[in-house]
Each structure stands twice: as structure tokens, then as C-alpha cells.
Image 1 (cartoon, helix red, strand yellow):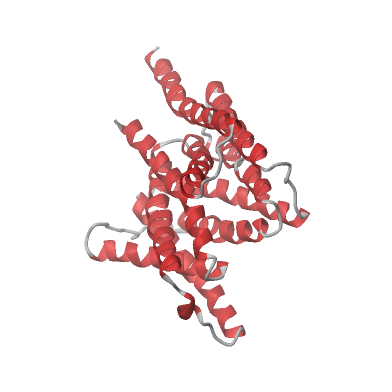
Image 2 (cartoon, rainbow, N blue to C red):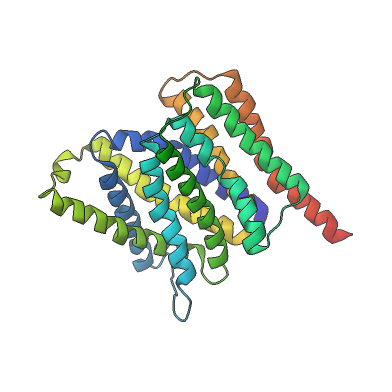
Length: 304
């Protein structure tokens, strides 16, 4: 039953993130990236605060060391979003997809050294299989358009490292904090930091006409990104990181690529390619193998 909840949480977060690309694109038709990021996390923080005030969520930070939470929020969302946004501006989207798909692999390496969480050889193989599935989907959809400015590639590699570090720090913070406490801290940390950046840019620009540019499409996108992509998805991720090894939780991220392809097929009439099907099978098999087969291997060893 516990594993079933983890699978549902991982699939749920990946599905939400997979559809977030469509909503982000819609919002950016009306507002700038920094405005979208600030409004997204402001919405998320207000929703979480409302849940706390209504008694649906309880928080208790008393007597706890907040350093791990600070590092968790620093890596994700703050540094990750800045580096990812600036990196994507400078490279082909396919390049970004390939680099960011290495997050689960990097988590596996970092978890082994920092948290002493080591996967079985079978789990390592299936993690790499899932990573290879993402490469198949992204590479063949790129039509050879892989590359970009060296600075963009460096920024994306750094964002990938930040995302992996977030997984490690969230896993470590789960020893003292509940998933809701971690998520609440992350959302308000993002509001303060991105809000500061937004305020400085607004002052330097002599004001903003943000409210006049908000329309039904951008508002619905902000609500989706703020409530589902931030509150719900990050809660599910933090929940999984409190229950699973970091690499086992991180490998679910590769499902986001598969969901984004399905979303494009359903809502943008994009064609599906044989390589999408092949890559999708590899991704699903890799995610399943890392968790199910790895869990069975551990259970058998415990029973010997």
C-alpha cells in the first residue's frame, strides 16, 4: 500500500509538470518570465497559507534546525528557476531536455556519496534505461537541432545540479520536517526572493502595467502553475522524498517527458513518432524497474 501511494505521487507530480509547459507557454504570451515566476509562487504561498489558517495543514518549526530547509528552497525553486530560465534562452529546447533529463542519474550519484543511499545494480541499470528513453524521445524530436551557446549549456548543467541537490536536501530535511512544512517554506522563500527581484526590476523600469496585461488565459495559467505545479506537485515530490530513497523518487521525473509528448498530441495536434513509443516504453520500464524490481530485490535480501 505504501509503495502504491509512492507510485501515485510520482506519476501525479510528473503528470502535472508535463502539462505545465502548455500553461507556461500560454502565460508567457502576456507577461514576462520573471513576472510569471513571482505570481506563480505568490499564488502557491497564499493557497498554502489559507490551508494552514483553515486547519487543513499543521506546521511546527519550533526547535528545529531550519538550515536544511533553507538549502532545500535555495536549490529549488530559487537557483533552479533562475539558471533554467536563463539557460533555455540560450540553447535549443532539445539540448535543455537532454541535460535536464540527467537529473535522476545525478541524484543517484550524489545520494550514494552524501546520504549513503546506494541502489542495487539492477536499479542503476533501470535508472539508466529510463534516462536513455528520454534521450530517444528528445533527440529524435529535435531533428538535429541540438546545441546552443556554451554559456546556456553551462547554466543548464548548473540548474541540473541544483535540482539534484534539492532532491538530496529535501530527503535530508524529511528527517525533521513533514512534506507540508517543507513545501510551505519553499513557497514563501520563493515569494520573498523572486518578489525582491520583481520589485527591483519594477522600480528600475519606473513602474509596471502587469495588471492590464493579465487576461483569462494568463490568469488560468498562473492558477494552474501556482496551485498544481507548485503546491500539489512539490508536496507530492517532498512526500516521496520522505518515503523513498532519493534516486527512487527522482526517476519519476523522466515521466514528465512522456506526459509532455502526450499533451502535445492531445492539445496541439502534434504527430507521434515510433521513437516516441520506443522511448516511452523505455522510460516506463526504467521507472518501474527502479522502484518495483529494486524493492523486490531488497525484500528478498531481507527475507534470506
